[in-house]
Every structure is written in C-alpha cells, then in structure tokens.
Length: 282
Image (cartoon, rainbow, N blue to C red):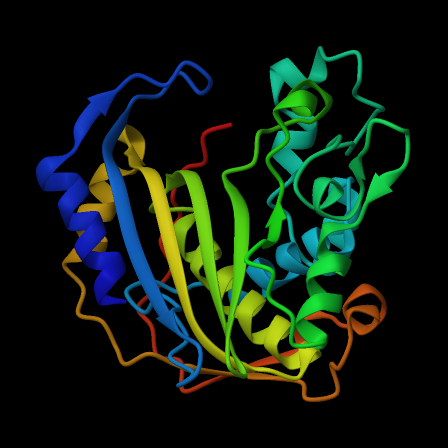
C-alpha cells in the first residue's frame, strides 16, 4: 500500500506531461518504478484507500493462464476489462485480422499458451515452466512472455505486463514481473493482485514455497482526467493490508484450466475507503 501511494505521489510531484497518441489524452509520467510483494507472509497488496475489486483481477489472470482470446470468455469469469479493447478500439475494429465481436486476437495468454513456431506448431510456455518447476528445475529461463512483436498486428492491444520470470532458490519460488506501461490509478492494483496471485498459484501447483514478487514498471503514468481523483485518494489514510486464502484443492495446471473460479480466492480483514470511479482511456 505504501509503495503504491509513494509512486502516485512521485508521479504528481516529479512527473512529466507526455502526449499519448493512442488515447488522445496526455499523461503525467515517470520512468522506472520497482515494487515488492511479500507472498510468503501473505501481505496481500490490495488498495485500502479505495475499494478494489480483486476478484475481477483474478478472473483476468485465470483467463490469461487459460489462453483466452475473447472478451466473452473473460466476462464469463467475471472480468469486463477486455470489452472496450475488443469492441471499441477504432484501430482494432478496422483491422482485417479481427474475427468479429469480442475477438481480442493473439494477445496475452494466447502467446503464453500457443506461441506460433516457424514450423506451424505452437509452444506452450506456461506448461514448460510448470513442468520444470515441479521437478525442481530452474534453467534460468523459466519465463512466460506475452510480448511477440511479430504478431502485434494480430491483436487488439500490445501487452502492458508482458513478461514473468520465475526463479527457484532451494524450495522457494520467486517471481520477477516486467511491465512496459502502467495506468497507475486504474490498472496498477489489478497488476499487483495478479503478480501476487500468480506466484501463490505457481508455488502451490508445483509444490514449492512462495517467496517475493519483484514488480518492475518502465512507464508509470496518471492520465490528465484522473489527476484530481488521485489527489483525493492520496488524502485518505490507508488501512492494514488484508490476507488472501487460496483454495488448497488447486493442485495442478489442469485445475487452473478447468474448474477454478475467482470464488476459490477468499479475502480476509479487508477495510477500505469508498470506491473511486477512474475514467478509462481506450
């Protein structure tokens, strides 16, 4: 929580105004931010200075892990974050590769589960990482990446949180997550929740202990139409961090692919201020 608030204050005090061609809304921007989340001690990084809807963030993560490519699939899990990018993004609507309503194209989880190889077959990056870690193997390249420049035109949006690297020290698993661009008021808490839950899940299904997440952001920004709301949020006093319980029956990647839902993640001791409705720039 403190890390989040400090980053927001840093952007307001030291950020530079940058024009954003895609959205047409300028951003107050800083370069380079590093955050850490202690999964081992269950310090769940959920915002308390406004109500945060953690289940939608977990639903989106589950969709990525399953390789979903349709906003309808995400909605079925309880996540609406892809509706606009799939159906209101003017560039994507005019893209000949778009297959129709709700189609997202080859973004995020599609790359993670079905990366196209030159011979026409696909590579399941996530399965490789799970298999290795389950056997106690760390080849220093236990990497899940969604960033495929050769297929940018085949999807509605380039990935923001684009690469996750898992590192094994003894029986403890660590995660380093890289993000090229971050809408701090609206998107960052989603990203924080997803990093935390990703490490917790990967440790659980591979029989390892979770350690820490190291979250590295390149471009962190606040859109101009979000600025006054963020100043209001910064005036609120944070509450203690809540805790998260993950259903212990989740034991495999197959479980994540089939029956797991956001209801398998239970929040404890969450106190928060009222919600703030930040505008979203498509």
